[in-house]
Length: 312
Figure 1 (tube, helix red, strand yellow):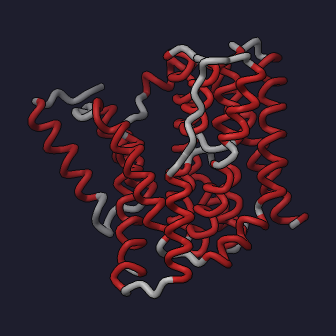
Figure 2 (figure 1 turned 30 degrees about the vertical axis):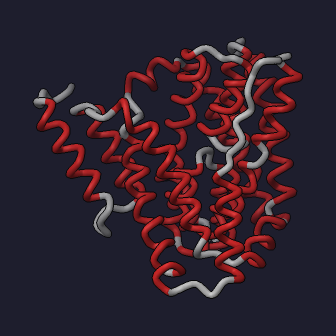
Figure 3 (figure 1 turned 90 degrees about the horizontal axis):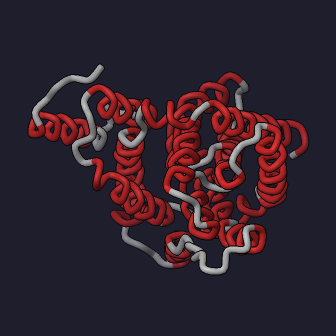
């Protein structure tokens, strides 16, 4: 059931909630929930623009967070998560193929969901879809499944983290491996703590680099000769920001202020992410894609958590 508001009133409500997300009163999970509620009970009057804004805001915020990180610590954290990253990516893609075949799911939809789960959600799906020349409906179904699970992860992961008494480092690594999209990884880690956020962002961005080899392999699997590979260049800017912060004596307003502003902008980003998730898009996904997405998500979450708790 939707409230009937005039276009002006809908825009005013949306902008007021967006501004609230820039204040300390709204947390990451609440911002995502607010976005979801407003787009389903009223509607998103800026639907044409929010997708592009989210894409740019996320990149800007991630680069901004780099100014609060130290290179030596960043390399150490990335090294610790490397073996787990490789194992979970390969396992997820193989299981995605097998479960998708078992469910008799469209090959491209199964591959898109598997890629989004294995690496970094919507970014991986966008990159891979260009290579395999997926249709708009195939892309939207994959994105719908991944975004739905992202929303759940933002609420569920911090709860399980506290229940299991995970350290900041362990939670940061777990969320970076097991949560699909960078925005939800950052949101969950931000809700857990500062150290968790730093580790989560580092490991997630290192994981996102695997889009490049995945896209190349995908070209051979699907024999896509005209597909374009989208390289996440903002990751290179993030690395540059970390290097500058590590070796240049920056003014305090940059070293402390830029990361702080970036964290608050991430809360706004999550509000916009939530505004792009509709009940209709979830329904249109159907049962089989959701079953595949849930199965892969549970497997990768339990496997990575077991590794962190018992084998690391």
